[in-house]
Image 1 (cartoon, helix red, strand yellow):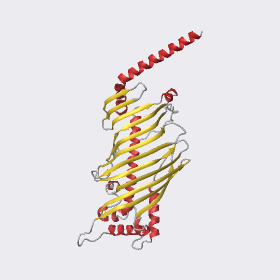
Image 2 (spheres, helix red, strand yellow):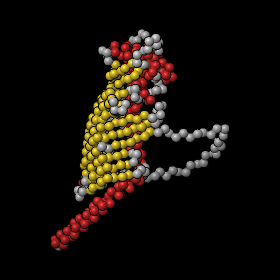
Image 3 (cartoon, rainbow, N blue to C red):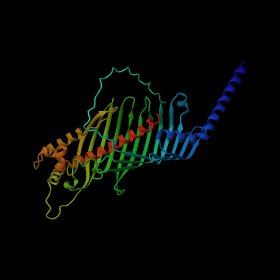
Image 4 (tube, rainbow, N blue to C red):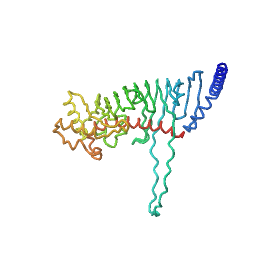
Length: 398
């Protein structure tokens, strides 16, 4: 009896080994074609791949992957967890992306021309039939134990700005992340990000640093964000409707932004600071009268410098939710108004400095405010578009 059981077990093991070998050989030979076709179906783009390798331990390596007009990868290396796979989860013990490059193009929404001089007759509404909601799609739980990105690059082209187009490049992206799981798991997700933003054909570069941790299950987090040497003049198309840099005589303005972010039980508080690190004003020509916008800009700068020992900085607080983060300009505006009131500036009235957008176009009073706002709007816009573009890729495959 014992020998029969041993023979049965041996036959089962042999059958499993043969099955595994057959499946492995199939994917090792056909994996490149299968993956390329899947990416074509998902992205609706031309896909090319230079090298594909699948080791017996299921370690995957892909080289020179190009999804036309969307993304490029010099190397993708992934090692799956066999134990997690047996539990019905797709978990990668390690995922390394070498020199990934992502392209994002933001275009204006399509405008449907409305017909004029027509009357639409709306028939009485019929009683709606009961709605049958589609069954919720089931996705395989996915996670990454260790994620490493080296030499990454994001090229963002915004065609919705007033100037017609604005290009923002984030390069030299270095990211290390641990315990990234897209399903409920009691883990701490730690991250460390560094990147560079070249301005004006790489003559000047901004630096981005983000590090911290988050507990998605408990909705706790702590992070520090630093962005140095932001070229506010380069981002002028984002706020050109609020301020006239020519009238304010601003040729160059560099900003630094820091934020200490704390979250507990879904309540997030971010202590933020914006500091003007460098500003160059255009000198007046001989006999040229100084416009009101320029005078008020001088007054605002003098007010801030008097309160901060010669520096120009503004502190404000953002409170939001971790599961639905939102940023409003009211926090920044209130802090700006409060600082001006504390300065007790007598050369101009407070209501002149906190003007509505139309009045700002005329006077250029909010130069400092809108330079800072442009930095925030530009970064948040880029982040939102990266998130939407990535989600769109996967939605197309549904």
